[in-house]
Image 1 (cartoon, rainbow, N blue to C red):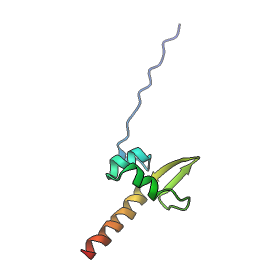
Image 2: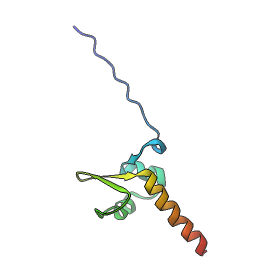
Image 3: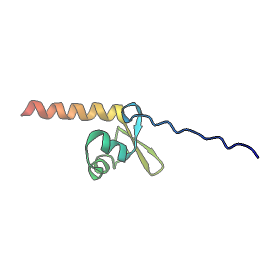
Length: 77
């Protein structure tokens, strides 16, 4: 009888992942799931990678877009 090999699953921190699921993006940004779904519903959204029906958020591009968006609101206050 052979000895079963135990595989370890390595957890990668969210801030190191290039693509995030909706749940990971919610935890990372603090934006609600439904708001993220609303923001990413169109096929031409620049920070979404569609894998079949599944949306993956391009973390670095989303960071740049959200940072620019937040900075624009700060200058109008």
